[in-house]
Amino acid sequence: MWRVVVRDGLERATVRAVAAEAGLSLGAVSHYFSSQEELRLYALDLVNERDNARLAAIPQEGTAREIVERHLWALLPVDQETRESIQVFYAFMVQARTDPTYREVTAEINQEVVALCRSGIELLAAHGQVAPGHDHETLVAEFRALTEGLSFQAAMWPDTTTPESIRAVVRRWLDSLATPPVT
Image (cartoon, rainbow, N blue to C red; front, side):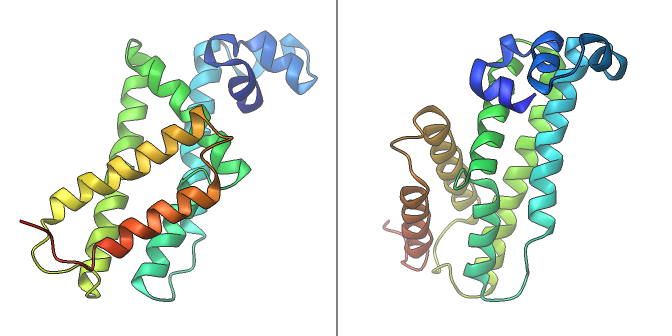
């Protein structure tokens, strides 16, 4: 399913196309998924499951900064798996704008990402890596905008938004947290 969505787009990710990609008969795929919508929801759930599995596998030792960075590298498109995950997720996000079938699931995933950003800011602040004077809710919003923007850029223009550039931008932003805000 993912290969079809990444290569051809969500609208072309039909049961027939997925069966052909997998080298299976239409009947074999239809046995597990009674509709195209069910197949697509499974693919969206799989995005979330894989992301959560990557996050759960992250070692929690090291500095707060190292832990936050490892969580980011597990979600941001810095390797083939995360790049494809982002591309599939964005295909569903676009569809969710007009199709309520996907709206609830994508909203839940979005809230999980916001919670991850919040916990990252809280962890950094608790370890003295956020300068006094920063509004934490504003930092959470910045963090979310940064990760969302980089993910979107990488999904749309993977040749120019490289893993190295993503890492550099994120590290620069994390460095900036130690500087008091300009008022």
